[in-house]
Amino acid sequence: MSVTCNSTVEVAAGDHVTLNCTLFIPDKRNCRLDGYVWRNATAHNLCEADPEMYKCDCDNMNYVSLTIFKPVEENYTVCIQATCGEHKSSVQVIKPHTGE
Image (cartoon, rainbow, N blue to C red; front, side, top):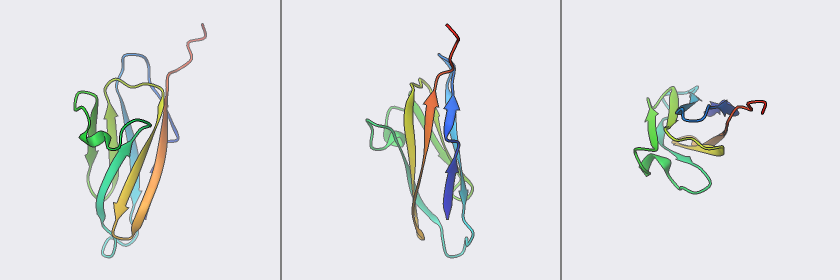
C-alpha cells in the first residue's frame, strides 16, 4: 500500500484549499484502511478539530482529502493506518508570490 499527495499546493489569500491524496492498495483482499489522521504542526488530529476550519473526507479505498477553510502557509501530513502497515505523505500549502 502507498499514499501519494501533491508535494506543494498554492492557495490565494481568502480561498479555501482541498488537499487530495491517492491511495494505492494493490491487494484489496489482504489490506484495508483502518483509519487516517491529518496533522499540522499544532494539532494531533485535524479531522477532530474545528469543523469551521477543517473537513476530512475518505472513501476507504482510493483517496483521502482535507479541506482547509482558512489556510495558512504550513505543512500538513496524512498518516494512514492499514491492516498492511502505516504510511505517511506530506503537503506544503503556500501562498502565491504576487511580485510586489
